[in-house]
Image (cartoon, rainbow, N blue to C red; front, side):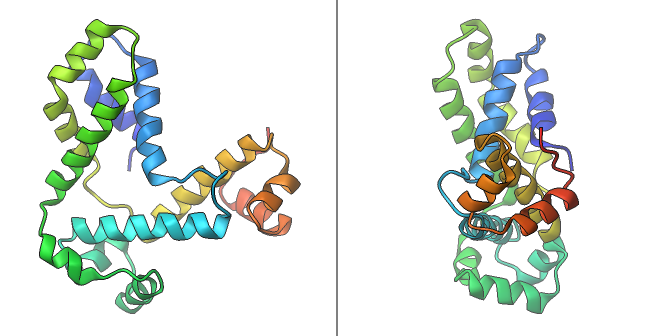
Length: 201
């Protein structure tokens, strides 16, 4: 799947002839912030639980509460998905009651994030006005491009790479200090960095 920045870029280009890197960067970061919690607020274990709970809740909404469909989207064995849902204390029955169309669910979320981003964006007001007047369409484009849920393994890998990368940056790429802040062993952190191709600058 495309990364968030390229999806945002494609959605904005439809209405903005001139590239607006600051808006793309800010909006992409706001979308990522909803996916990846700040490492300064949580240990690795806590952040992983937080992320997976959000991921599985969204997965169930996008699957209309249908476990069979959720299993297919997540590319997980049914028993494994049930075990994770139970561990995270998620009630799939609540999502069966909602029956929200996946694209509408995403569109509504992206619309809110767009509005929040634009309200704090003051440069180049004429371009921002163009984005405001096309919020519905831009939100729909974002939803259509992100309506295919990541598999469980893809989501977990993406989370770990983003989260650990940000944690290392926040700690000036000091591996020992980062491991201490995240309450994990240096050996585990080095192993994950190698697996995820995270380089120390």
